[in-house]
Image 1 (cartoon, rainbow, N blue to C red):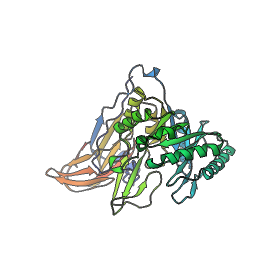
Image 2: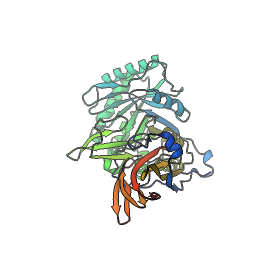
Image 3: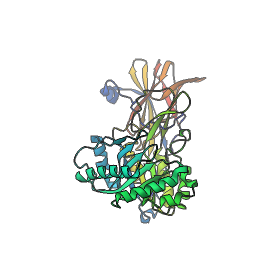
Image 4: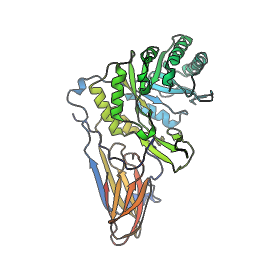
Length: 435
């Protein structure tokens, strides 16, 4: 049985922590009936790529690795509940954000509706995120107990508590002592999980720190300078091999199913990061988009599962995609990658007549996986005006106008994107797209 995973076109934009599928630029015609029936495609340019093999013969006999997922939304909307219900069949446990301790020492609890939500009988790991300095272990234990007791009253079965703290490597010994105090304060009522960073692996004390936990989640995405991208499969594979030699506990790997946008300040530093929560800074001119390509992640999973490192126990996805999460993969793409289903990529680029002499350049993903739209769209014909939209910019050369994609982005299947417009005489333009 062969598996296909796309060979994604390489983006030409400066993308960094990326927004993935943004609402900006999506083609929403004023008259839907015109788009569906009367719009005249002058040329439909279809770009289709062979996709990657699924699993070699005999793979059915190999171990099926557990896949968990982070529910990182601080407010549970109907879309979150629906996504949990729709995805439960492929998820072993939910790692649910319970509270976050910000840099000022204030707790921000996730807002979850009263009553049991559709966690579909799966185990729940309550995640406590700590930014900045470590909290007092006794104070944290009391807050953990408060949140876990509240969830128990709603019918949740909390199987573990996870601490997500980006500890400085130089403070790992202190972190280990903190984990000891936390475990004692919790009275052994719940398994203790922690997240781990690749930068910790040079510290001699790391194996001792990891031994204080029951389970460990190795982060391999968004752990380096944003200029290096959100996820790199080759680096992640090296980190897994190195971590396997160090961890005395079962360990999992956190995989990305999202994008982010990095907003740069005047001094060249990071001013804000938009991912599941908007930074409310509009279309800041100094920003870059980062995306995790589903094809890259799927290939990485296959390679790791074919030769699993010692102690590897499975995957934890960050984060649960929902229908209204503008920077996560589409739920269908996520479930297809989780299930190792064949994936097909195809993009169609068309010129649609909007008015006499005026044409919209529309790109549509006709495959079944989120993928990057074409990097270049060339418009040939007797044209006298053009413009780019939706992440595309207008360029000129000796042959005439063309559109260049200036941002890294993913386009969901079936979603049309308005990439630009052109004014042409005669029969209209010919459209040619390339990765």
